[in-house]
Amino acid sequence: TSDGRIRVENECRDGSPGGALRRVTGVAEVVKGDPSNAKLEVEFFWPFRGAYWIIELDHDYQYAVVGHPSRAYLWILARRPTMDNALYKELLRRVGLHGYDLTPIERTVQPAE
Image 1 (cartoon, rainbow, N blue to C red):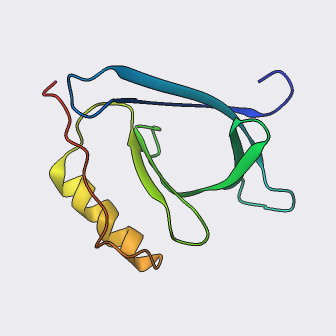
Image 2 (cartoon, rainbow, N blue to C red):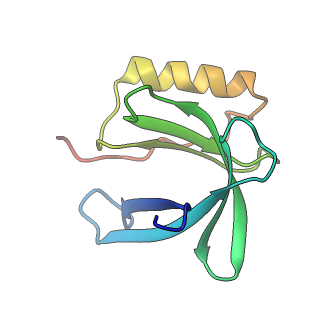
Image 3 (cartoon, rainbow, N blue to C red):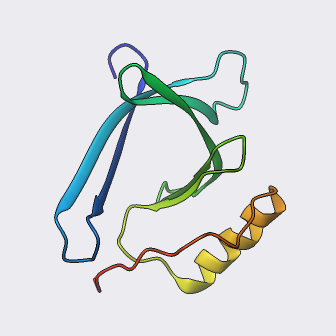
């Protein structure tokens, strides 16, 4: 944004691939003192802010894996509705190496492209 913050846009379908589109826009700032620029504080609803750490990032920005330092939250975000299954499994493998419990992770059902 013009003030140096990062615009964060997330969207999903409510309940099923044909459900109503839900979108949320927030702003993020890099955590002070983080030389990697991968640790963000994001605000979707003022005044609530949360840790939003970029764990994995595609070199072409086609996907990102974002987690919380407590390891209680994790999102695999993609620009397209579907992701190659081999890539998804590899991302899960690497997420496990970061100490995340893979048991509760659910892959969101997506419409065919």
